[in-house]
Amino acid sequence: MAAETISSMAMIPRNRKRFVQNDQNVGLLLQMLDPEETKSGNKKLLLSVLINFTSCSSARKKIVSFGYLKHIKKFAEDEVTDAKKIVRKLSGNRFRSILNGLWPS
Image (spheres, helix red, strand yellow):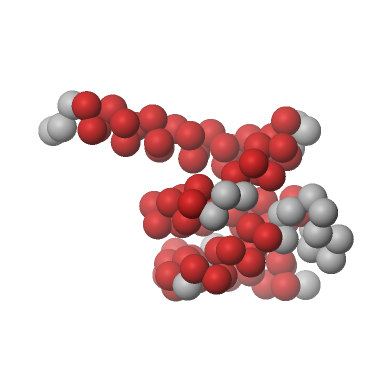
C-alpha cells in the first residue's frame, strides 16, 4: 500500500522534488528493491516510481550514490523493462556529463 501511495505522489513534479530532498526517503525506497528484502511489496511498482524520480537530476545522483544500482541492474538483466529504462537513464546521463566535461560549452 505504501508503494501505491508513493507512486501516486510521484506523478506530481513538486512532490517528487520534495520527496528527493530528504536523503532517507530515497534510501528507503532503494532499500525496498533489495532482493533479500522480503517485506518490500511490489518491486515492479517501486521500479515505476523510480522511473518518475529519474526525471529529477538530484534523484539520479542520489540513486547512484546510495549504491543500490546493482540491484536495479539485476532486475534489468532479468528482463524487467522498467529497470532497463532506469539503467539507461542513469548511465546515459553519466556519459553526457563526461562529454560535457571534455567539451565545455
